[in-house]
Image (tube, rainbow, N blue to C red; front, side):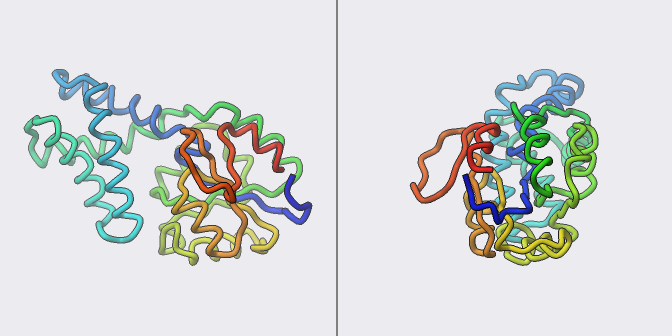
Length: 229
């Protein structure tokens, strides 16, 4: 158990509560079957996931824009598949994907149970680097909005995790103190180290069981949060 001083818990959304990979594949499956039926969803996702992660990292540090992120991750995926598409097709797919993505609502196993458990003891919040409109749709469509007192996204704060400014913004919005707050997320760099650098405690959601330093608190399943909180 952590110290009883904790009053506020900040969650990341994608890859922590909302199962981005599953929901993303469902959205792409619809688009590919309709517009690019010769591409298998398995082949597409295999190329897309690492490309998307690389693009998000560039976006996280303001090395590419929002529009470049949406375009590049698709263009580079089609290039890797050696499949020719026009810019107009990519723009159309990028739009359709963003529209379809939040319509899916798969959450990580244990999400509702752990939010119900923690919500009785703490104030719950979200800090996300995702695009505001899309993130609100995800939260509402998956029926978890009622658990959270505040939602901070990078568009509101003007910076992205791991920049300490977004954590300060979230703390101010929540009227919470950093010494009584904790961040939970799947990204060591953005969520865990970002929070620690900003003065909050942190727990790493390590569902892929990657090797990490022993001094970092971690869980491999959301229900394991009960042992800390």
